[in-house]
Amino acid sequence: MTGAGTGPVPSRAQVAAVMDATLLKPEASHADVDALVADAARLGCGAVCVSPSMLPLRDVPASLLVATVVGFPSGKHHPLIKASEARLAVSNGAHEIDMVIDIANALAGDANALISEIVTVREAVPAPVTLKIILESALLDDEQLRTACRAAATAGADFVKTSTGLHPAGGASVDAVRIMAEEVGGRLGVKASGGIRGWDTAVAMIQAGATRLGVSSAEAVLAGAPA
Image 1: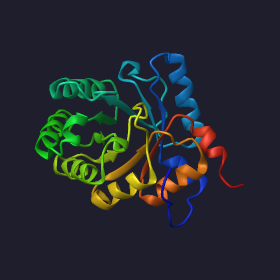
Image 2 (image 1 turned 120 degrees about the horizontal axis):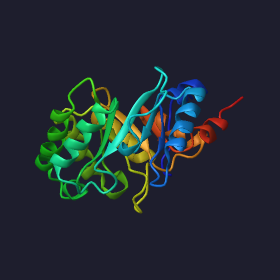
Image 3 (image 1 turned 30 degrees about the vertical axis):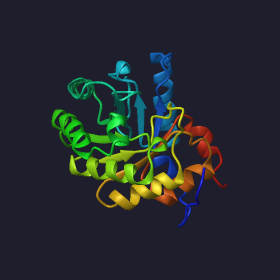
């Protein structure tokens, strides 16, 4: 992780509230997802994020939002497939959609292609569904990242998100979060995801401008909070 966050240190409860407790392993069972939901509710997390095949979820408390992924993890699905996947997920109880863009368009700086793809999904799942756009920020240089953020805002997305957490290029960084927040802060949310495994990293992401965190082990992150 490079860079450093600044600003006040959030409380344990504040960090938990912006966490999407995430389970996207292909071997995850419904019992695993049930345990995720129970743990997220106990810890005070704001949402759970699961694979679309796990929907609808059972016994989700009203305090938890349900998120899922589309076009995951490669982003190379046709936009109409992503739109259909998103629409089906919402019909199965998802409140939030985390969509992987076609990364090649971001690398090419092709804002029009990015906007077209995102609009296709946005039209399939209009507000109040929350649409988050996964950019794989570790692959992009600063200008490519800024272009992708601007495209997401133009297309009507609600959040930009750093990473799937599965690409070999890496996950979230403080520097990427800061750039994303500079571009869309106040208009869109910023979700940092990928490699957030400890309290200090989580806090640094929030201080850099992240308004949501995707974490695969919420309890381990929160265990590092000051007593």
